[in-house]
Amino acid sequence: MSRKYLYPLFMLIAVLLIYWAERYLDQRERQPLIEEGKILKSTTHTTWLPSSTTGQIVHHEYYSLSYSEPHEQAEWVAYELRREHLSDEDRKRPYFEVDLAVPSGAAHWRNYKNSGYDRGHLCPAGDRRFSKEAYDETFLTSNISPQRNDFNAGIWNRLEIQTRRWARKYKKLFVVTGGVLTGGLEEIGEEGVDVPEQYYKIILNPQESNPRMVAFLIDHQESNQPLSAFVVSVDEIEELTGIDFFAQMDDDLEQQLERSSTYWK
Image 1 (cartoon, rainbow, N blue to C red):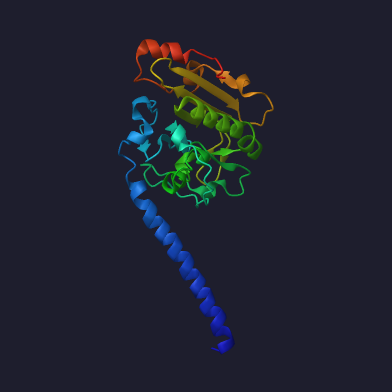
Image 2: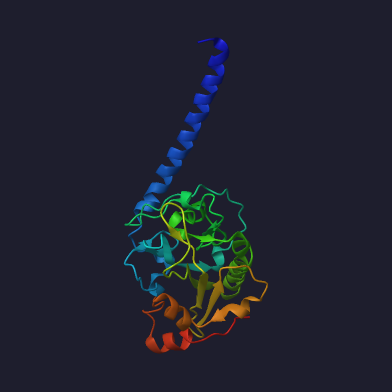
């Protein structure tokens, strides 16, 4: 082979080796985190985990989820958000990775490619900037759902920002998020990832002296309405989803909090 072709060939091989090494080391680094998916984590505040309609609960280090195989996404993602979790650290966005801890197999990120929908986080990356491990963990495919860009960057983003404001104000919150998964939904990709028509977020302020709860149910479209316009009772979301969100709570307190539909200041 002529020398003029050898140098470009060596350069191409070197680039490919570097790319492979980075991907391999990244996988090796993430593997222990993924394999520990069945272990309960104190960082998730498991006292308040919702019921699962699917039996596929996975515990990661900084959030837990219940995966719905028919819909190829989580029916809920739950986690604790503390004031000390809040950070403006500018972290490099990692690659999305298939969640190997899901027993039935999580959907691949390629289902979203050219679908017209964002890979919408359920546990926001913005809630987990306090460490690289916590931030990267939000890029597992079990933590995403197809979202319209204007919705994801609009009303849904405003709700996530407001949730962080409340975490700063009240010190500790417990958050549950998901799409309303029903039959007959639009599907994307080879694996048939369902596109929810509504998304919900439930926030518990568990302070002993005055526990409070607020829930949001938002149609999957952008809106200029104030967040307060989307407040509903948890009872209403339970009726839509079949999920018992606070089954381990004292019954009287659960009934009192779950029928509330008051927006927080």
